[in-house]
Image (tube, rainbow, N blue to C red; front, side, top):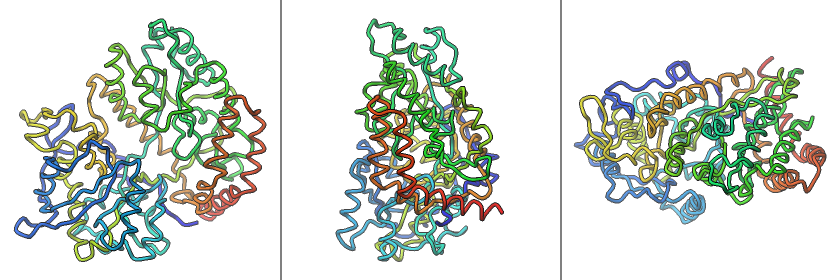
Length: 533
């Protein structure tokens, strides 16, 4: 095991987590003060380089005013090689296998805790990507250094302490359940606090026609058929928190670490039983078995098909806006984590986290040799005051105009991360609230801001000395095994559907501990004990 990250956010990030940048403000954003471009003098020849990234189909660099503005202000000529996320890795692998004509800059995959890119080790070993430490200085990359979580730098260093990837950070936060508050009122129920309250609400949504259309077409909650896999845990992790049976590590009363979902006491059976009850009630969306990801689940909420879904606070009004296009009186509210009648027995356990706030990163290939400093200065520009204004607001006269100190949106679609999402795939000031709060529904802005702040502050409780910034190599190996990727979700679905008894979980727990999971637990505990002595 190596130390990959640290969840310690620097004081300035925590203290000023959502401080808006200086400049004229409006409910829809802020124009920050300009600074000199860091991409190079306009009297010099433009630096030419290519970037390979994934982006939605709507993103096109051709005749794109934003792309042109970036090139002008950074004195660069950037070639954008954009593929959809659905086949990005295939396209990237084919490109990297083709020979020496690599893109200058390529995106690297990470998990929340560190690098998990299948190509990374081989690219470092074969010298395809370049070490970057000598360019990550206050002179060359001051903004990258300022706006990158300290934990993220640890997360992307290799075993020798070298940096081959510039982290692309994101906001470190909790996500809460959101429910149809208009349906709650129609049904005459209070906001759920316990697991039992949630089951009552879901059953009412399913059986009492809260949308009043006379058709039995509403369900309590949805998820995906892969809800147990590493890419899932959307809603199930929320309910699992009642028993500390989610995908978090906990310090038990005995000082030993345990992983909630795979705790040897079998507590995850509480979660499976809850979902089995929802299925029995008919309140678990029957479409969940065919849903393939977060977007599919969000569409079920937007379509008015389900009464709740776990959401990022910065996205609530986006989903609510779509929902109100169908049901104008619709409304949503966030709800804190639930408790259960037997939650108290887990109260003494403390949660910990290994998140570095990583949302992938950037590597420079051998094609970029000799122009590393110029390219990194351009990337750094995106986080400068001038660059961040372009990232966040677009091009003046095209995407917005100023009316005194107030922004007037000329292109309301700009802030929705659609055809302009190339900018979001670059670098971020991760805790800038204006990046996340789009003000699509102005009356929800303060409410969203309250929950966004709360979601960041909630992560502070997970900071524990001794378990900061570790990612077990044994764990990474286990998460790629068929036992986890195939047998685990299949068993969960069979239990939820009543095809296997709850006790089948006990046999599975014994099996995973005999096939690699005990090694994971041992690695975490060894590291933890060594760093808390």
